[in-house]
Image (tube, rainbow, N blue to C red; front, side):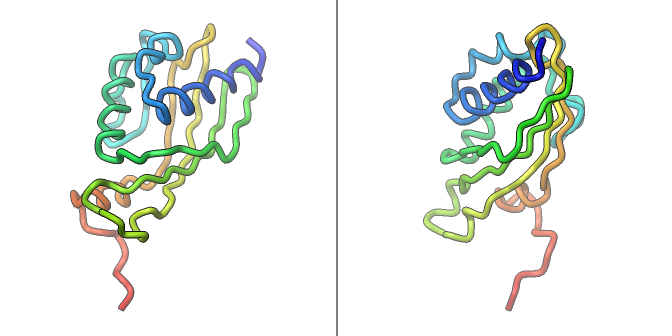
Length: 142
């Protein structure tokens, strides 16, 4: 497939699955043996069903979740996505500080028109802190 076709697959995954919640599209965009080599538990997310569960969990934890594509480039079967996400957890209420953007990078490998594997880097401790599951990694300003 052409570089732009692989980039389009990753763009659709972000815009339609993550931002709109069209979970069934994971069956078409992710290979049956898809694996995410990073994440909260490396190598746990495997296959389209795991993508659906993962997205549903994040969208439940962050109901206003919106992911912006900052950079999307492809070279052969590899697609680099630099993204920003916004969406406070429900317990944050109207706290404007809870809307800080989270950023990350994903490198995906596409095979035969589907995402076959991904490697992700993002601020996992920061997300866990927003959910109240971990202490913030930096001292609050006084």
